[in-house]
Image (cartoon, rainbow, N blue to C red; front, side, top):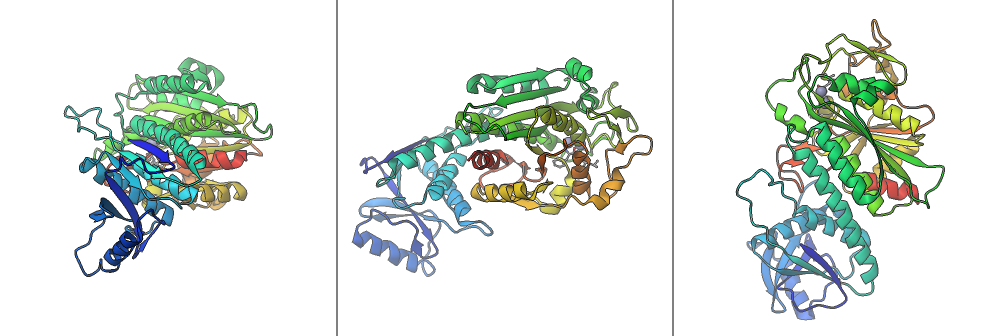
Amino acid sequence: MKIKIESKESGKAIAHALFFVKKSIQFSSVLSEKATEQAETVLNGMEEGPFEDLEFLELDGVPTFFVNAAKERGLTSLDHLRMAAYRLAKQAKKKQISCVSLMLADAAPEQLKSIIHGLYYAEYEFDRYKTKKQKSFSVVYEIVVQDQAKEFSKIANDVAIEQASISMARDWINTPGSDLTPSVFVSEAEIIAKETGLKIKVRDIKALQKEGYNGLVTVGKGSQSLPYMVTLEYKPAKASKDLHLALVGKGLTFDTGGISLKPATGMWEMCCDMSGAAAVLGAIRAIALLKLPIRVSAVLCLAENRIGSKAVLPGDIFTAKNGKTVMVDNTDAEGRLALSDGLAEAGLLKATHIIDLATLTGAMVRALGYAITGFFSNDEKLASKILEAGQTCCEKFWPMPLEEEYADGLNGKFADLQNTGSDAGAISAALFLKEFVPENTSWSHWDIAGTAFVTKPWKYTSHGATGIGVQTLVELARQLGE
Ligand code: BES
Ligand code: ZN
Ligand code: ZN
């Protein structure tokens, strides 16, 4: 795919695309008066005749896609545009149309951004393991603008960077557990560090043990593929000295549950249990390439939760990095143990703001499903920024309560804490994390267990990793850096 922002039509377009909402054309277009009238007649009559989304009709002598930008239920108008562009791109590929001109002369910048995101989503394919790869047809999209060429070109470039990061995150997530082990993930992070010039620090199990990162050690020691912590730092010269955003990601490259073994059905999906780390790595890559003026660090907590002769036993007690002792009541509640070290590391880096992303609880999947990410925060200002950034990026968030009343459920019998609570699974998990958040730090925890990976088509994902979180993190960094 190629996107070209032009100040006049190149004459190469084989088809036009006209976005409509209900019965109206959405953007003012370059159509002749006669063709505009014709389009309006078609739209007015669409309920009577056979008229479908992506109808292909001739206007001004050019075949024109009529793209419905209000088709699905429950989406914002920006997300409708993404979906419309996604469907259009799928159709253009199917019909093998080499150049499509989008009529967006008076689109607002955020509308253009949404449309370009939608076009990119249609490109994603995870076919590494297919012996017969589908031939991909490359379409050129021409966007004819008036005086916004410079602004629109920047948007197109920025979206290209974000989308490349999203696709990388999705590739890592979709890769089976045996092929993306903690050490393979470390190599991926090293590649990103090289590409972007980010500073990188890798701790192996020896370093983790020596420095007391025992949460990650406890979770990962049962596997042949041993745990790692990766810290990446982006510190641009023009960033404010008072703000340091740390992104912490759960990176369980596979979660069998450990000795508290998970049931067989659907266990394969646990290759997605490193989606938090993937989103965080994707986000810091984009933030660095976009040269956003804000200091950002990323901490990836990488481990594999497996059964083995060295695996942690239920009832085992370890001392976490912040000195608290923890009894492992259930080895399947491993994400919070791994994250305890990520949060401690963010504190040592002197982060002012911490956001952790984790496929943390089945309870969150049951509460909010696959379309909404539940998040927690100890700072209302940060929470409202997250909601706002999410909306801009068409990623839905819902604030959850850090309800202290449930905190007693985490009291350990022989240790300070235990890793499961008695009620409210997603809230208990968040309260457990809170025990490890450094003092005087704005913090938010995103439980992406439902939204990171889908097993049926959802929006612009047929199945598998959605890449959730990358965009909202980038947008948040953009806003915090302003
Ligand atoms: N990785 C899982 C959570 C999960 C569930 C992610 C569904 C993606 C989709 C997590 O480690 C886990 O197993 N959590 C347990 C915690 C329980 C034992 C307290 C859960 O939610 O069942
Ligand atoms: Zn688990
Ligand atoms: Zn897990």
